Image (cartoon, rainbow over all chains, first blue to last red; front, side, top):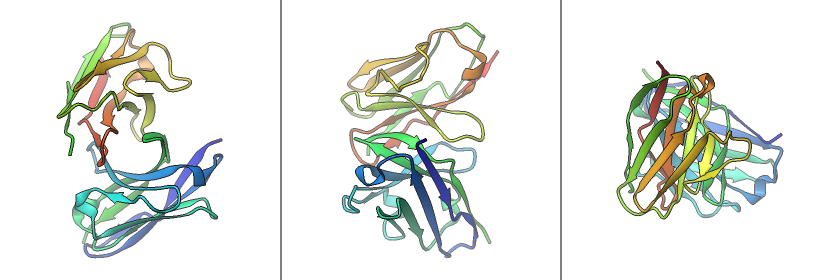
Length: 117
Length: 107
């Protein structure tokens, strides 16, 4: 079964940091680009970042550039999102999403990040 | 960035009704459009890609059409299990961008 399982969410104060992880199984992880997508409470979906198959080809939405870093470890079949200088507006559910030739086709269940003092 | 304008934002319909949602891009996205279904408390699920290609296992009552800037998503006969929020999303250019969503309810 193709599966993505996120972890690492939690409550953090503004200005703090968190590292999200996503464990992939059931498919050839190294052959797919990967993304992070965020959903603020009660709001719509927002793409955050994308990484190429070899860890190159990295792109971010402007609002997280310089604060968030996407990375991957193909040997561990894992995707990561290092989030620094967190803001209240970064609060939401963070989804790990597989990218099949630019189609985001498989989503994890999400991990919740709450930025609050 | 490409802006995606989705309408309506909410929709109430009866079981068996034909339901249509529209999505307009701020520029030509060459049919690089996905449609997702999100049920409450669940992750989004890909229903359709390339504007009109059904993902494997998705019922045939769902369909999509369009080109250029304008796209349509249709449920031919609404079923109770179709209650969800639906999103369009373009993948012609990064950043990928989504429509605001359409919340579909049963009348």
